[in-house]
Length: 107
Ligand SMILES: [Zn+2]
Image 1 (cartoon, rainbow, N blue to C red):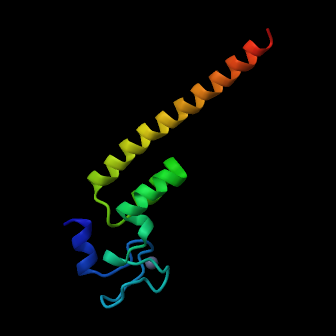
Image 2 (image 1 turned 120 degrees about the vertical axis):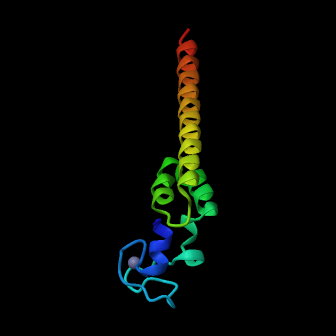
Image 3 (image 1 turned 90 degrees about the horizontal axis):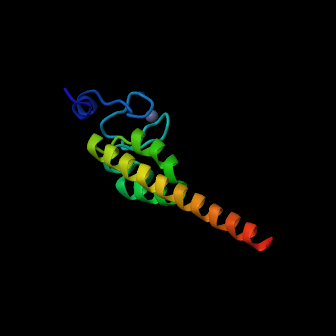
């Protein structure tokens, strides 16, 4: 039995585990939505937006998300790792460029 089946049979909040009546779209305890009422930052649009704004910290929300599949989470993790590596090497390259520039300026 998968996690999704568990939610429909025994309605509890995916975030805090509090009992959640089927007619409620949001948890009365922690305020998290479920299904299509899940907060935007747990969806694909949120994953993309957070990756562009907070970088690797977006992984926190991606892995907590109840709506993204495991495959999607792994794909986002791979993409974010590559982007983080690329940005880090770009910053390092720029830092080396500035350092070489200031070193050359002394002569
Ligand atoms: Zn809750």
